[in-house]
Length: 139
Image (cartoon, rainbow, N blue to C red; front, side, top):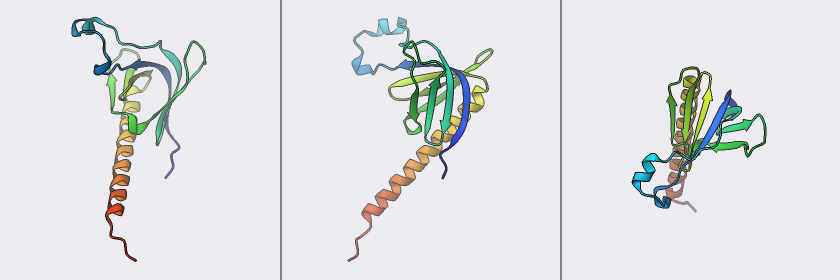
């Protein structure tokens, strides 16, 4: 099986950090009016492979770095409407990555298909390992 490049898009990315509920030190009233913790939009290239979603910025400055997300860590893929370019959001347990790209709906669908395929592969591998562990040993 090849894990080469599945899709690539040029666009802008913003990373929003998720604060777990147990670590929040403020009450619910403040939470409603607090803006999400997010950095600036950074231009670059998103690359989807069979195992990862990677972002490479066009400039490495102002704290913008490249990042790679394992597809198994992505819990949901969401696409939101937009006028010129739509926004695709990739959610993990610790962050939400927003990407503004042209052809966002098709890219979101491609990422969702790859995430599902990764989950199925992981489940099949786990089942195979479990059945191999239960097999009786023969001398």
